Image (cartoon, rainbow, N blue to C red):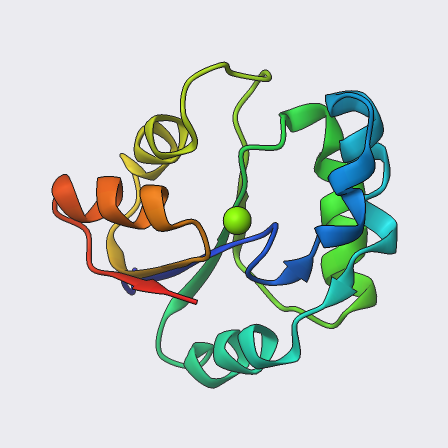
Amino acid sequence: MSKAIVIDFEGTLSDDSHRSGARDWNEYHALISRDKPIEAAIALAEAFRSEYEIVVISTTPEKYRQEITKWLLDNEVECDKVLLPAKRTYDVEAVTKTNLLKPIDVFIVFDDNASTVQSLRDVGYTVMEV
Ligand SMILES: [Mg+2]
């Protein structure tokens, strides 16, 4: 199995900025389908596709898997795996992501959240902030 290119979903592959007005997490997640694609990140996934496993990661809970999978399909993002926590966690994003990444042979992570980037680096991952 090849090493994985891990790409964050919200804010890296998809522009979720329009969701900032959501009143709660349920409303926030329900708006996934309206996210605009971030073309540069999609091109990045495409460029690595032949040599690496493409893994999409999000802290959005499992029950929204269909929405995320549909978005990826609609925006022509080919990936091998989508990592989501089983339930909404109240941990900081980096803790949830570190747990999700444990079984993955990670080559590099792309993420837009500066504190997540730093925390993942602190535990040894190579991370590129986008
Ligand atoms: Mg993000």
